[in-house]
Amino acid sequence: MKLDRLIWGILLLFIGGVLLLQNFGVIDFYWRNVWHFWPIFLIIAGVNILFNKNNSQTGSVISIGVLVIALSFLFYKGQQAPNYNSWWGNHSRNNIDLNIDDDDDNNNDDDNDTAFNQLNLVEPFVAIDNTKKTVLNISGGGISFNLNGETTDLINADVKKRHGNFSLTKMVSDSATVLTFKMDGKKNKWNFGDGGNNVDFKLNKAANWDILMKLGAGEADFDFADFKVRSFRFDGGAAALDIKFGDLLPITDVVVKSGVADVKIKVPTNSGCRIKTKTGLSAKDFEGFEKLSDGVYQTSNYASSTNKIFINLDGGLSNFEVSRY
Image (tube, rainbow, N blue to C red; front, side, top):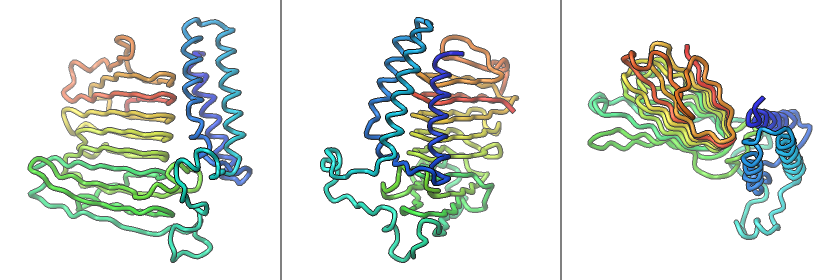
């Protein structure tokens, strides 16, 4: 087994195990503590680079040993309640709110942690604007995003929120209709173990979509098979991404930049597809693709197909899977 895949597997086991223990109430884990020690991941990457090329058993043992020690340290620190009187607490915000779980909405009762607030955001479909490209900007953290079918409106967003404020705005220029969906407020942005917020999108099939997504911690499950998606760009941190593309346009561009993420992409078999990767320690699984050179893969029907999908993957400690359906 390659060292990078083994390291990725251990990281996934660590994150999944912590989330499972937290969800069942076995431990209280504060992810904000982990982010303070993010340089540890640079150390892990550096050790792997030093020993991975040698393919020696001793080097692999050292790399795995450093990883286990680092994760054990993070596991210990993550269970300590945040000390806002510490060095970084005083330098970051002197007026930080210690009671972050109870002040989201003044109108909520003691069941605030388990109750959702419902919100529906809609932008009507305007036929004259549909002659332009439609750009959808999505940003937020601690959110589960889903694509839940089509709508006669341009976009419909059903939001179930526990914290934060959500907004949907529209701006029309000579060349594009630009929609911006975002969550305001940084509270709990990186806390993806509390149930978070859920957003179900419905999109109009007539529009030509360019989608740009920035997600801190969370997940996105989008089935674009029946939608005309010209481009999809994702910039995420600790995220899970499951995307399916169709073949309704001659060219689709996909760009994914991630930190620690699980990325799964599905493309149709009758579309030619080329993948370019810059993935560091990430694991890669490209079923049905031929390797052309270092970091470049493509399907056998790439040259002959009418429709083409271009995928660029850039990640540090991520798992990338691209499959055909």
